[in-house]
Length: 214
Image 1 (cartoon, one colour):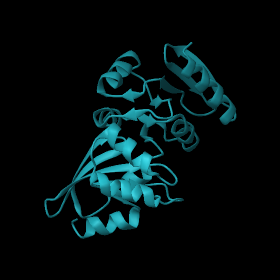
Image 2 (tube, rainbow, N blue to C red; image 1 turned 180 degrees about the vertical axis):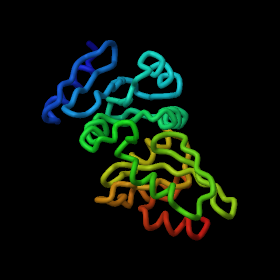
Image 3 (cartoon, rainbow, N blue to C red; image 1 turned 120 degrees about the vertical axis):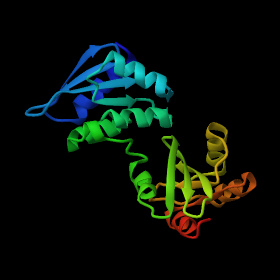
Image 4 (cartoon, rainbow, N blue to C red; image 1 turned 120 degrees about the horizontal axis):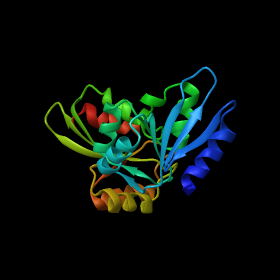
């Protein structure tokens, strides 16, 4: 049994009551709950999940309900996200999986670290096109035709190093959006953004930028 599958079985068994978790084969587990359909979850140890990995998992497990990127720093590519959402397969972290089981939303669940922030963007009336490149990076086209590449920064109080590392990993962005509602970017992070050519903002600032068409 792969290490991530073993950890997933242990964590789900401890985190949920009246649940039985069993290994199916390879990276797949079955989660059995009273009076609910069984859930087939694939637990991936990949550092990056792209369309190739997603299609392979789906071919191996056609009845897959949820695809879990178990590593904390796992990155999801946009094509992979579109595929699983089109196929009504939930996706995200182990925490997302547990929350989805509790809410009975396994097949429609999306990574909980980014879900609420991304919903704000989807509902913004000043955006005419939205292209998700990664779980935390998207490109928007505004009503005046301007385009922006936006990165979602999860840290509680992003530092200059967090902004630079994001650029090294995902490439240049116009906006670094600190989506953690409980913290604020450090002044060093804001200055690092300026040096790189991007703005480091919270939601209220981003909302104003979108309203003013940047």
